[in-house]
Length: 305
Image 1 (spheres, rainbow, N blue to C red):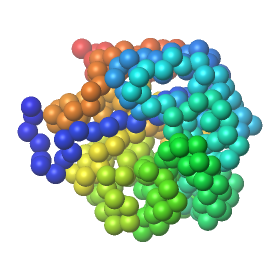
Image 2 (tube, helix red, strand yellow; image 1 turned 120 degrees about the vertical axis):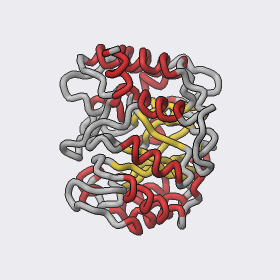
Image 3 (spheres, one colour; image 1 turned 90 degrees about the vertical axis):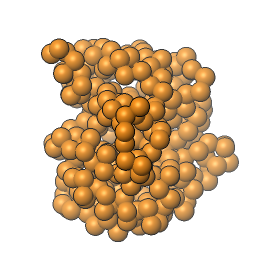
Image 4 (cartoon, one colour; image 1 turned 180 degrees about the vertical axis):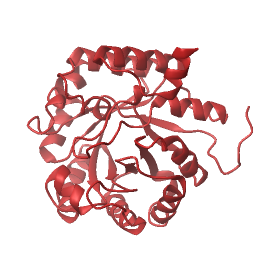
């Protein structure tokens, strides 16, 4: 086993953002439902045990996710895998529950401007909207995850104070979210900023209930992940093939590639239970299906060799 600093976690859980983050920002054509289902099956077979498989959002705003029910009901479920979905409001939650999701998620932002652009309301209003969602999910015995966007920068406001991120994260945690995923939505963060943000949030929310959701726009996602792992973060959001982006953050690249995260973790001797080669194969398959090139550095390096 490779040597590693004692502050790093012994085991890391990967939270796969596909096809939600992975496919919702595909502008060229609608991705077939069968392709989404096959992607989920391949990821589960590779050993990934937490997959956000759908988004129950308005098809008017995100047409790519209009088949969320068909996707959830078309999956052949692998025992031990949690299949979750994004549910921004009560209607989305009810649709998700009817489709048999295992877990749901709500999403807010640390930036007022981004909150208005993304979900058409203020941060305070978004938190009020989530209250009935949390209550109904608890009644259905379904866990809720919370997302906070723009934790290291906003396309409209620039730098975001770490204390603001901590306030929103604490509000979601106090509301009942079992885990808070902290998103560098536009991928502008650097390791020191990421550390300071995690330090501030962990004073309000236990570190073992925080997750890192970093985009790789400036190529810093892996460095930032290592930095927050040193602070105790042991849950990482990723998207196979480095797919994704954000329709309300111009220029934002996809989420950090699952392949690159696995390569980092394997080099550190950290266990995940995931087959890197199977994920590489899946990344090559889905990017070819979409007519795209993978952005995973590991995939590109393996292709050259």
